[in-house]
Amino acid sequence: MDLKLCEGAAHGWLPLFKCLEGVVSITQGMTPLSRMKGSLKRLGVKNRPGLIIDASPFTSPIQMFRNLALLNVEVACIDKGGEGQCTFKLNDDDVTKLVTALPQPESLLLGQPCSNNTCATIVACLLQISVRCIKLQSLQIRFNTTNIVDDFKNISGDPRFQDLRSLQRCSLPRLDVMRIPLTLDGPGIEIVRSGMADVFPSARFFVWCGGIWSSGSLNDEVRRVGRLQMCRQQV
Image (cartoon, rainbow, N blue to C red; front, side, top):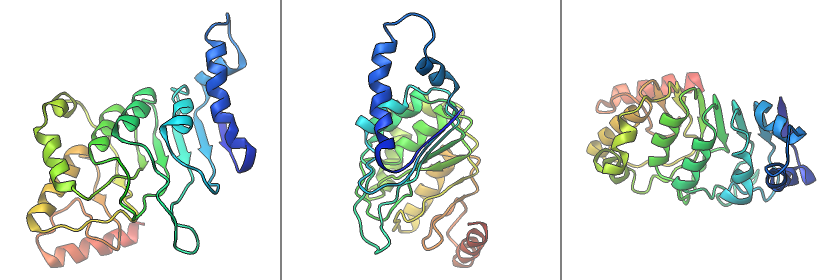
């Protein structure tokens, strides 16, 4: 079953589903909503002005659809005039709750990553996604890169992540970082490269073609330029 919520009043269905779930839980037998919860495979939410990706009321109702193979939220922070504020209000805990409730997605598209770098999520949420969504083949999510080197160091050293790091990762072929900024020195580049390869071991490229993102070695300038050219061909 597929469901696409377009512009206008259609977005009101998400909180309505949440309200109905409380009623359904105390009733007997199968209902249209209970059947929909099990059979819905693809959910699309079309971009509209003012759409915010937050824990409540946006992602909380979605978590009841545990068999979703595709969640596609079509929202961008930047408008046609090149202006706008980040619409992504989830933090790492919110993302963890979402992917724990939705273990089946092959595509998890939570809006186009932007250059604002003001979101509360960091790269730790990527590890949660990788180990909990084993079937994942396509991912769009924003994460803050302000302290990305220290964030990756914390993942490798924090005891809270040790159990996660022992689990199987998804086979994501490429992470689309879009306009997420990244400014690093030589040692920082290697930490980010190895950190990304640890989280997504099957991915070949982590690239925004205007930046220096890459899953390969960036120590050699010629190789760096070559990789960026290869990524431009693939986008």
